[in-house]
Amino acid sequence: MNFRQSNKVAVIVLISFLAVLSASPCLCAAATDPGAPADPTAVLLDAEPADNLEKKEENDTSITFHRKQDLAVKNPFPEIISEAEIEALDDKKYEAAITKFFFTRDGANAQPEPLTKLDMPKVKGKLTVYMAFKHADEHGRPQGVFATCGQNRHVPPLQDGSIYAGSDTLTKYDTQSFTMEFNGKVVAQNSLKAVQINVDTFKNNVYMKMTYDVDPAAERLLFNLGSTGTVGGYTQTFIHLEFNPPTKATFHFVDDFAYRHLQNLPLAAALPERGNSDRHPLLSAEENKKGTILSALPFTPIAGLPDLITAQDTGIAYYMRNTSGDVKTPLLSYAGEGKADASKHPTLEALTGQQVPGYIYYANDIDKPEGGVFADNNETKDKPGNHYLSFAYKMKDGKPVERLTNKHYYLTYRAIPTKVAVQQYVEEDGKKKPITQGKYDLYRKDGVKETLVCRNTALSSDFAQDTAPDLSELVNVVKNTAAYKQEGYYQTDKGLYLIPGDYILRQTEKVAGYAAVPDLKFTVKRQLQAGQLGDLTGEESTLKTLSVKLKKETPADLPRETSEKTPKQTLLPGNYTAVTSEKRENKKIVAKTGETAEVFNFGLYCALGALAALKRRK
Image (cartoon, rainbow, N blue to C red; front, side):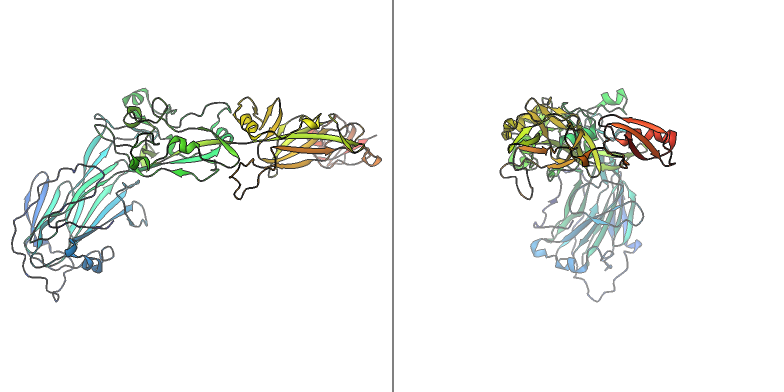
């Protein structure tokens, strides 16, 4: 962060997200003649000599030094603020000082990270402020420079990482010590008092470095620094800094069935709001009653749940706990909210109106205010709850190790299914004659994994009735909670409906006199609506017809002595001899219709060794 002052004479630069400045000690010094400009041939000292700073006063809140001589000292941090940057300051534009901020997290090999916003760091470390004051002209100068210790605000987090909303009984403030260097010389170490250094002349540049410890449990760091006053038209630098936690929310658009599977929720159940449904099982009854608890659950994304379309973020808002009403922003916008605030977050209508190709919106788990609606009222804007952008903590061994500032909420969508008709037939006189004998099972195929979806799939008896439904019928099927079956398909009195995916139709009982039907593999694509095509390929119709043409059984299809070497192969009815890995054939088996070789594996393995083959006996 690089702050340059831009107002004439005694203008104050304020950088804060609160409207009220914290109290600071009265810092002033008597004006004297500025003296002559710096001598460019003077030898630069490595650091400020200790005996050049005389302590003049110390009280409960501050320490004041007097700088005896205006000595020329080397820039102690040229890699942070270069001489070129200092020289570029133009006092005609009322620039007299330059300030930069860095944060270095605790740990080996940690590198300083520049701070470009007043965002309170999330983890433990050190916040360092670098300042350089430029000698402007021979007639003007600052009367002195100063920096204050910090002020923290905190309420200890709960053991599950949740926090209490602010209140006059829970919110606490304390003083944060700091270390200050003046021209490379340490003048205060872990000080809880403000430090001021008065100057009589100002012919040379002056440098300050302040370091503040940062702890994730402390959610605010406030301090002041700059020049105490000026004479001769020199620009005053006064900076009020307040670092607070930036917060936001991410809204994910996901598959409803996948969400429910990962959350162990029934298909017809309403989705619980993420934070408001948290019963805080780790907390005692006393802790639950002590104050309004803001849950940590929404800050953890649901693992293994992919987004269907790009997730949507809110803007950044700062959540600041207070003793008399928190500074907070609702998750969602509402009618009547000002334009500036409304631009930071969407309305619920805008979120639920997001289109996912081939899907329809179904439900969401967004935390809502009391009454269930975001509106221009006390419940939405003032009453504490989980429906605000806030923060929580990652805990380890009962202590906070990281502040969590990104909530995650989910809007679930269900894929629009396709109606499927299985038409088994024989040709007679050039026409298709429906055959409803025989049986088929339906499997869903995910890679090499096959999952049974529907047993004894219905066969069409009247092909003329197999017509493509309107898209509205498919949408209504999705909304009919009774239509969806746990195995993964929809079934109504109008037929079978499948969601997008790869499937196998497998015959389990052949039709007498006709040859066995091999597996029929097929894919159900998305039902794309107008304007949703993009790069996707959708179904050509709302009806998918699976045609199974039967062929008369020939001698080649009749059973003969053979080895059934595929354990999952369906066996023809009849008597078999098991051939095991030990070549013994004394195990007699009678196969029922539709059984496979693998159903015998366990018993054979125990009795005779691993199954090698089955020989059908005439």
